[in-house]
Image 1 (cartoon, rainbow, N blue to C red):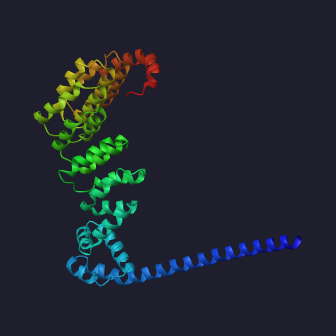
Image 2: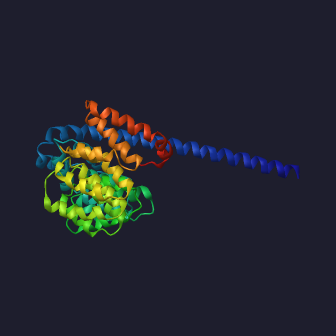
Image 3: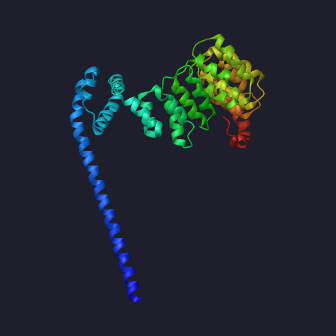
Length: 346
């Protein structure tokens, strides 16, 4: 019995030794293979890099030279170096053209069709590769959030067709991505104002209307009565939509919209909307804003008065006649301020 236990123990020790030895050998083989691959890669770089530097401004000749590099390792070096040149403004166009001529685009599509990875998505985005749209729109439905998010972002860098644009925007607006990220992606598309207004008219949910209105920020510089006619109805909708409309118009920095702000303030019953009006009004640079700000100083709501007071101090710091009014309003509002501090509206 004792001999049997000894044999079992010895067998266990031998098995453990053999297992550890195999692990060590396997690790050595892997490391050696990595070093050999790295050495081979660097040798290919020494051959290919000078050709790239010499011929990058002559893409036709570059294609002719690079066609001789056909092994998997050489192709990888060619691709990596061309991608590097594609990031540089002076060589981007030539590099992308050479990539296409050498068949790398088609190879990427075939490879990504098997399994879309973050690396594929990054390449498609860098290359602004239009043919990748079907793969990327499919990626937006992935259960993997990184694949989903990065697919949405990559599409925003592609030159989309008239048919593809609404497909993308509808999918983006229906996604669970945070609104500010969606706004960034829509801004990345660089849609003109008319196109944005088209999608705004198509929107039915307040959330989507707000996003599209905020995409219009800083893009309404021109005095356009037709544009105003299209935007004014949104000043009659829900509180959040009214606020988004105010912010879109205010960032125009155009006093053309002052009269609409003035009329809205007179009839607006929601103090939160009036507070935003008081805060954003000076962005319009309207010559007659002071009178409206003075009216806001007498508003029944503290936040409206607070925003109006701050703007009056910033805009008219040398107006000595207003100092007494500020002191009166601030003293009367001290208790109200303490009560309202936690409401979060400014």
